[in-house]
Image (tube, rainbow, N blue to C red):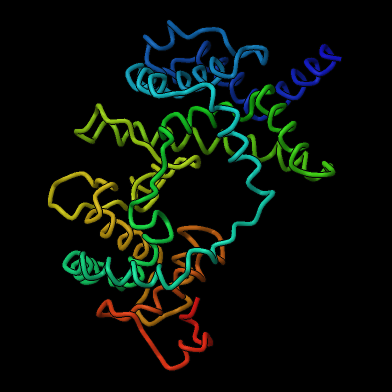
Length: 335
């Protein structure tokens, strides 16, 4: 039985997009000098033969990174922060996310309104500056940062590079097998549609992780805090605003001139959120444009709804809106 499972795993891998891409990349590197721009000579000379699906998932991910041209210094940094015992868990959380629809309603409460009020008072100056630069209301920024990390209290504990290194392994046969077992434990009946969805997401997550890892390496190259390990969520988002690396590269802004944005600084997070929303279509007094910008931030209607509701319950001066209807619980601002 074990040999049959192993044979099926091999066949699955050999027909996967990742295996075909790896084989094509190997052939190109061996027969043409065009691959020299993507892989440095030193990396090519030390490249291990790990394209076999029977290689360990770790070696498989390392092979991918070297083929993509990551520096050995960055690879060493990734390995230093990687905890191999969490790989299966991280892959399962990301690949099997389709099983559950997130409920964002719990982010709204009278406490949340009060905390946003306090936040707007504390960061009044930066919120005012951000609005002047990006035309995004302070109450919207306060609400979004509450929903994302409770104003910086819950930013995540996973090393971000380790998350993406784990996800690079998601399309390896052994990780697809472990995700399939987890799927069977979470659902009473594993339908063919679920199985197909799992395989598709395994490949897509691995491809996405490669692009995010490239962005992460660029962040480390340009940031002076080279010895720090960036920590974030199991999905690879980090900082008070929970940006993924590519979002950081595109929209993160510092509140200080000529300084890299630090998303663990609330001032920088305020400007970065405003930059993100503005760049993705946010417009004052245009609810539909706001909804589209928020949906780009997180593709969940519940997420969009709770942020707009929370923002609507704090006025522009950072004061809790109280009406007569609040007392009987019929107001939209009642919990």
